[in-house]
Amino acid sequence: MAIKSTVTALAAAVSLTTAFTVQAESDLTQVTVGHLVALDMAPLFVGVESGCFEEQGLAVDTRFFANPGDNNAALAGGSLDFNINPFTLPFFAANSGVPIRVVSAAGGWGVMEVIAQGEYELSSMEDLKEHVASGGDKLTVAVLQGDTLELIMVTELERVGLSTDDVEFIYFDDLLAMVEAFRSGGVDILSHIKPYTSEMVEQGGATMITNNAQAWADKAPNTVVSTLQSTLDEKPELVESYLKGMLCAAEIINTDVDKALSLLQGGNYFRVSDSVLKQAFASAPSPISFTPDIESVQYVVDELSMLGYISDDTSAEDIFRTDMIETLEK
Image (cartoon, rainbow, N blue to C red; front, side, top):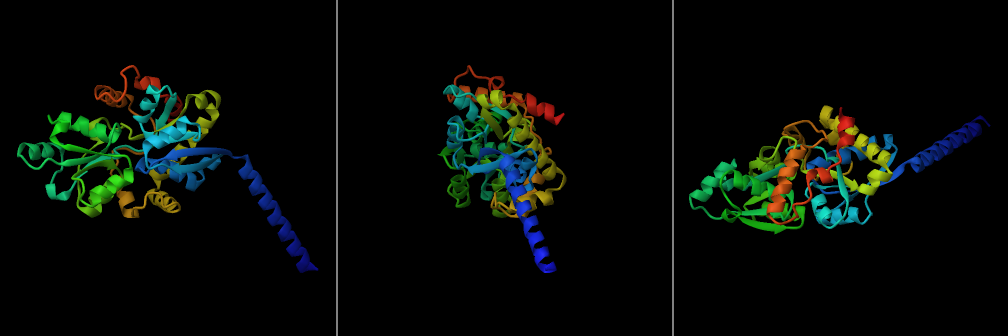
């Protein structure tokens, strides 16, 4: 009888625990976030794996997009609550009349890097200028058209007195395909993102020429967290909860990177070794935070306008709504 009573009690306890868990999960607000594969997605991934978002009452569903344009279209169409995309994409949306608003940087600085095949021995844009001046082969550069990955090359070429005619831009629409093209030797220079550039440098003999911190500002973003204006208007508490979850995740990465690496293994998010990932975090110019340098964004937007990608009647202030994250980070 004693054994039977104990089993009954245990069964009842398990039943109550299960019921509580189901109830707790049902109390969470479902949130869907579109993302790419850059290092500054790490706060999103760590937030999911650590429970940071659940602490804020959110059940976050992540959806991978290989193409930033598709990610933007999904947010514009209402199938996502937030997305993480290059900061240029909301300006393209604005040109189409879609009110996408940036609420914070995604989390990470110096994430964009331009790397070259090791055989060219280029370690700066100045080295590239010397290569061009010496009459060397015209080098091919893998970029995404109209994206920050193109704009960083435009900016840095101008800085050293070169033009886009001095190299050959090869346009891709898939971030991972760009990496494979560089890995296989199909292109000479790759404008891309950590940790994939980190892997090419650490294990493939590539050299880093420049990054977005050097090109624009220490806190020039690579990607940003965006939502629709309607979400900001109707669900400000949802936006705040999401940002608090990101801040929680950033604290883990900034203070205990080994714990963060362990959490990231749970989802195999980046598909690079822990050593490469750790180096990518360590080489950032500043700890992870989320308030971007708006002046650097405006500089790039002006470049976009000059290239004819967007009209010149949309400014960074029209798109960026960072007052909430600025308050939370104080």
